[in-house]
View 1 (cartoon, rainbow, N blue to C red):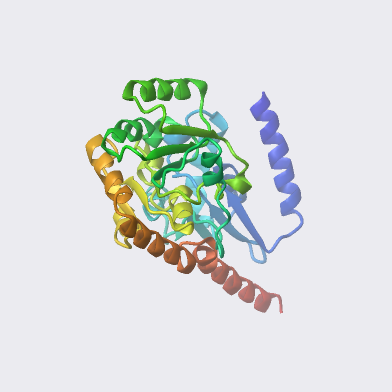
View 2 (cartoon, rainbow, N blue to C red):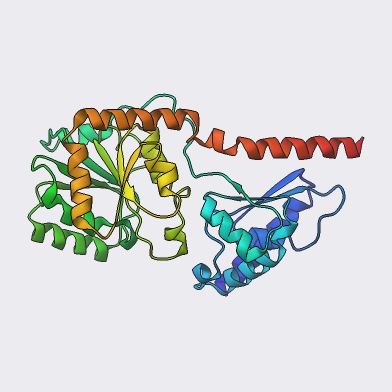
Amino acid sequence: MANMRWAYRYFREFGRQIAESPDVVVAYEPDAAAQLLQSRARSGGPMRIVHLHETPDKALYGGSGISRIAVRLMLARLNRADAVILPDADRAAYAVEVAKLSRPPMVVMNCPPVLATLPESKLLTWLSERGITSQRVVHFQGAIGAERGLTKIIESMRYWPTDSVFVIVGDGSPTVLEQLHTLIAREGVASRVFFVGRVPYADVFSYAVGATLGITLVEPLDRNTQLCAGASNKRFEYAALGIPQITNSGPGMRRLFEAPGIATLVDVADVHMLGQAIAQILGNASLASSIGARARSLHLSLYNYEAQFAPVVDRIRVWMSGRMVVKA
């Protein structure tokens, strides 16, 4: 009943906003897309853009009956959109396949806005207050979940330099945290692993600046985690901060991260490979510096949201100019 009430309020508000005759409408995710595309395009109607962050796989929406219906309707109608956007090239290819799209979607990778200057480090201050002065700081940020490879990272610490530390910024369920603490004790690294906890989003970058190395592993548990090279914002955030990273192999990863020389790819299941890759970066300051410089440069030129979204802006401008000609 709660879902039904939510759907009623949502569709009522949707109708109210459409009645205001906007020039462009962006539908984010299947519920909005299914409603936006329920009728065929009409002359003088708005430009209809569908922006999908998640892979349009019906199996990923199994927990909600309304969402399952929305995905089915959206896929049946997706060719009616004037533009479809996804954050990853492989997710876009999957959308073409399942929705039988007549033209490929636009790919807008999940990059942060241009970060012109780096913030002051709150991370190093936080560590200093606890008596930690290590120059070898391995960093993780984000939701602490089963797909993030944290158990493998902790197990790999046996191969790291003994003066290195691992800092985790984020939060997770009590069950997951308890499991990690048990593993940390078993591995004998309790004095080298630090949980900062959740920080305000405005401070996320400040709690990463100063790290030697970032870890952005994603274990391939479903189609979303398999096809996430361009969708995982954490990878692009480390690039923005000029921090080298260790990440997982998978579709699109070599092209986006290994080939430009801004990350080392590993098999997320191979603890020895992971540990050796981390140790190599921690043991070579000049290597870490050169990787970080390339990452920072790539962020400023291409791996930022302004650059990624520019083609969409251009398409909207072309559409709007045509609309103005018709009105005239």
